[in-house]
Length: 507
Image (cartoon, rainbow, N blue to C red; front, side, top):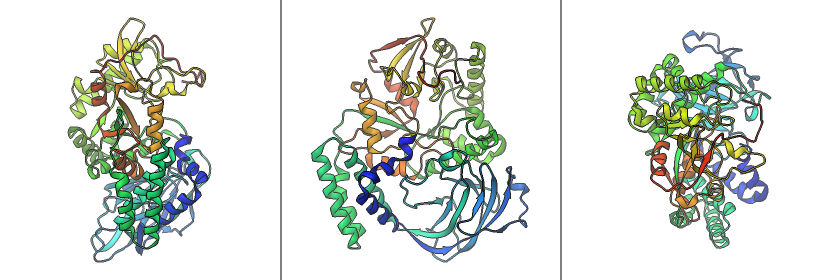
């Protein structure tokens, strides 16, 4: 996670000139059309939308702190949409997380700066665009249910409002921003000296064109490098993910709220990004949506039916497997499968995968339990955390105590929060002992309140799907990857417990 947070910080330290160029390009992406006003109602605990006292809002100035650690608030954003602004964007600067509603109480979008603070590049800088806003000419009124869980998610600091505005995006400069970032990141990550030299020459020419005031010409300078095809014999199968701990550094009420913010963000991305697949686990979080956000839940059901929202694994939550009894683990699977079948119409074929990316070690009894409850594939990244012995495989068969076997894949990057940049893709292949199989899983996005994949993930991967110097990338469901992996000759078998050599005694 530290690597994710300081991606641009590391590049900036090594290449401050390139970082300054990117910031300069980014400042040209959005042009203000009109400022928006903000008002606030503060609270220590969440207030449901239906119980808001709309007469209690008070003005909130730009730069003001709106809450401390784990505090809640409602922000009301108002203004006037001018004629001809239907293609504009509402930008909100907010240190924290928010679920955005319209005046009728419909969930529009989730915005967040969690795990995206400071040095993660974003074309809007400290601001975040709000999608699904009705921008017909006339009054604009939005409500943001906000929370602050601390800078870089840890419980320190304060939530701070950094303004809101209506702005138009320059699509040429926006495209240039991510063209430039993609190729700069590749130039910084590659070991191919000739490729690096070519890429840096393209970047220099593009920058010269941008300085002349011609961003279209700058994009044209980068186009040949972006059109050069991959020569790799390895392909990533990429699925979006927003890993969300049921309990970590916040109260349970925030897990419920983080779930809603994440789901609405990803449902919007599914609708906006053709071919994109988002994966989610833990039926408990889906049940909260059914109970608290029925309109979102209906959208989830539609996305599952369309094959764009993948329900990963059958366990009710991503459970520990060392402390519970065998009966408890069986119940996790039985109850989870029943919910996914009854509420989403899934059949046994769609429930063959066990998804436990972050559990702290795996009992040798688990393969027997998985096979007995209809699962034959298993995904984790956790053994990449070993502190002494590097676990020798990433794709392998796992034989339990009774001899039952399941097919295992551990995404070779060793993360379920990949940002999908060039160094992530290259690092994963370098760490993949079974790369001769030609296929690996990429699980990308920001978890624990980061809301899953955001703008940067999508824009980078859209340019990297078939790019010289990198493995190829396709969007796919994790179960489709496992179905493909099962047709290959996976050579190794591990027998018994999958022991985690990290924070022993923590479950």
